[in-house]
Image 1: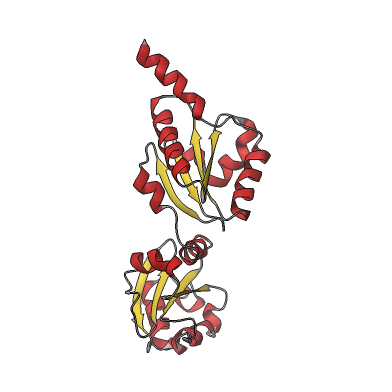
Image 2 (image 1 turned 90 degrees about the vertical axis):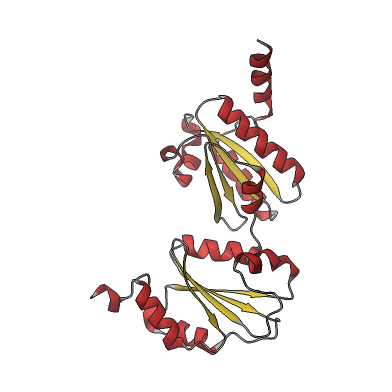
Length: 239
């Protein structure tokens, strides 16, 4: 009985639900303030839901300067907007989505989540830009530069001028002297002590097509795209 009372009392930490518009506004307001939002969907206030809520609450308390959270009961018709936005009715619940200030979904954790997963869902600004581009079905060309004065490799510029990829590419730039991007360099496995630019190329949903030196040509990058079958250009569609 004591255990049951403890579980019921613990549900009090779940934020009270408002209208879908209000929850959407909360997410948008957090984004404007540069904060990440963990959007937790649930169907029943059971032990799994409370365990997830406790984990998120602990994490947000420790990272309040950059995170917040909201909860959504998928059974509530007033919350249909957010449920549809995240397609939450089709995954095992409870589930939490990490949402970056730019709208990129940086993590999806069904049924259970831990502190490390929530922490890893917080990306650097340039990393979240890359993720957002991929989620928008763009090919991401990431240029890791030693300093802000270094030019984008000519091969990248040539690729971007190729009419076949005009509307398919998104360039992301990160500078090694920017300490805020250290985690991006680490996850991309690029040494921040680099002396020359490094180019990485990714295709949706997150396929790594290659890491290249600064001397890579536009033609080489084009060939890699065609070889991957991810470019969806008119030339490849005819094959």
